[in-house]
Amino acid sequence: MTPVAPARSRSLADLWNDIGVRKMVFQAALLACVIAVAVLLWWNASGNIARRGLEVGFAFLHRTANFAIGESMIPYSPADTYARALLAGLSNTVVIAFFGCLLTTVFGVLFGVLRLSPNPSLSRLVGVYVEIGRNVPLLLQLFFWYSLCTRLSGPRQAISPLPGVFLSNRGLRLPSFVANDGLFFAVLGLVVAGIAWLALQWWARRVQERTGRRPHILAWGLTVLALAPLAGLQLAASPIAIDVPELRGFNFVGGQELSPEFAALLFGLVFYTTAFVTEIVRGGIQSVPKGQWEAARALGLPARRIMRLVILPQAMRTIIPPLASQYINLTKNSSLAVAIGFPDLINISNTVINQTGQALEVIFIFMGCYLTLNLTISALMNRLNAAFAMKGH
Image 1 (cartoon, rainbow, N blue to C red):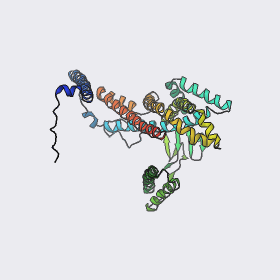
Image 2 (image 1 turned 180 degrees about the horizontal axis):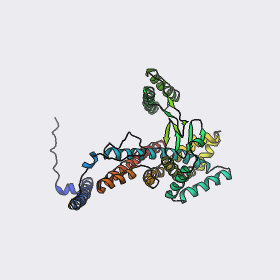
Image 3 (image 1 turned 45 degrees about the vertical axis):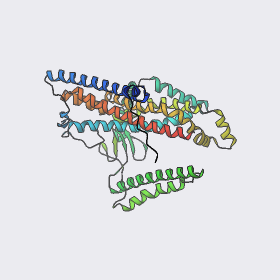
Image 4 (image 1 turned 135 degrees about the vertical axis):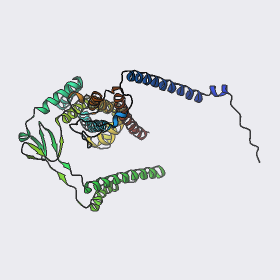
């Protein structure tokens, strides 16, 4: 039996000379200093507030708000609490940020490709848009879009670009799904299909690592994606129903209404941020070596397939990091909604501060909300960036 050597004890000097231990000590000391400064500031501020006879703490969140909110993505009434009111504002901010990022990505990629079009008129037209979009302050653009939305015709003379879609000075009316069990089971089927698609991707990757050949899973994935929602509908007692708006009297009834404030904020954010994303996409495409274009043309690929299969996947490694910054900027810029009266988180927070006088606590809450939103966006984009970076090796 081999004798076991006694463990060698480490002195304090040995520990201090260990770079890993020393880094941990310095980081712990820095974290302790930050916490100490935060506690000192909070203690000092709370003491000053208490001496003025004001309440300190977050107990006000459970009191009745007693004010209405023009539009909310979650059910809300004046009888709800301040916490519910702030949650309604946060939901509005999240919805604006989500659709803003989605539309900005679609239009940014489209305009970025058109910016490099061999047609000089088309390329220069996109260039003019880029210069206008990124050189006019966002606040002025919001005022412009809001003025435009509120000066449209009334519901009787509403613009209808598509069947069931109406644009008037009351906002934008769209067809909407009726919330029933048919919709629930269809969405559930889509979720199951998404999980099955991820499982197929994982299985194909494992097979490729083991054999060097990737199996064709596209047909299987599309089949699951089509059949799973249909299977869900078979389990539902009622089919999916769509509520189409129609004009009754002086206004529209039914469908989903987007207020002029919501529409102006969304148009302004998308118009402004898309100009930056267009330039990011253009720069990313131009960063791909010309040899890649020439090699793809030598294989006989048409221009659209070259862009989709060869150029854009490589350009994404250059596009994603600055694109993440634009998503974060769009989320933060949504706080300018207060200028046109849209009830986002900042707008509702101002009302809560005016009613309760607890500015420090409310500011702390919405700073935490924006920090959480932007860190989430950053984490998701970092994962996406890592996925594209791995494909490049």
